[in-house]
Image (cartoon, rainbow over all chains, first blue to last red; front, side, top):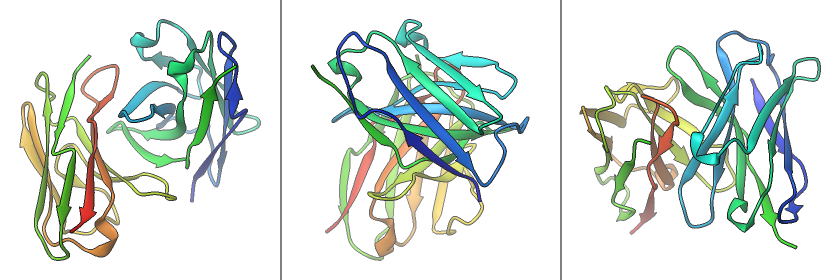
Length: 120
Length: 107
C-alpha cells in the first residue's frame, strides 16, 4: 500500500524559501498514471492546491501563487519536493503531499501533513 | 479560478440521521467533483469522484449527486466513524479548488 510522508523544517523566516520533501513508500513514483501533488491548509481557511509533477518532469502550478512554488522529483529516491520562495506569514499552513491518479484526477493517497510556520 | 461554495460550514447530527452537504461551483464543472473526508490524526480519504462514483472500499451509505454547478453528498445513516470534516473539490480546470469544508459533529 502506497504511503506518503512529508518532512522538512517546521519554522521558516520571512523572505526565505520553504523546502519540503515527500517520501513515497510502498510504490513507485515513476508510474505514468500518477501526478505528485502539494496542497496546503491555511489556518482557519480551506485547502489550496499548489501544484503537481509527473515523473517525466511535467509540472502544473496554481497561477495565484505567482511563480513562487517549484515542484521537483527524484525518482531514484522515490521523493518529490516543494520549494516556495519569498515566504511571508501568509504561507503559514499545514502542508500535505498527495498522489493524483488518472484518469479521474483524484487525490487518492495523502500524507498526514506537516505544519510550517513562517516567523522571525 | 472556480469558486466552490460548500454548505453548511458545520452540522450537528445524531447516529442514524440522514445528512446532506451541498457544494456549488461558480461555473459548470461537468461532474468533475470529488468529495473527501478529513479526520484528526488520519490521512484524508476519497469518498466519491466524478460527482457520484463511490471510491473502492467506501461504504454504500455515502452517495453523491448533482450536475452543472450544484452537487450534494449524502450520508444515509450516520455512523460514529462518520463524524469528520468533508470537502468538495473540482478538477474541471486549473487550479483545482476546494470548498471551505463542512464539519460534522455529534449532536
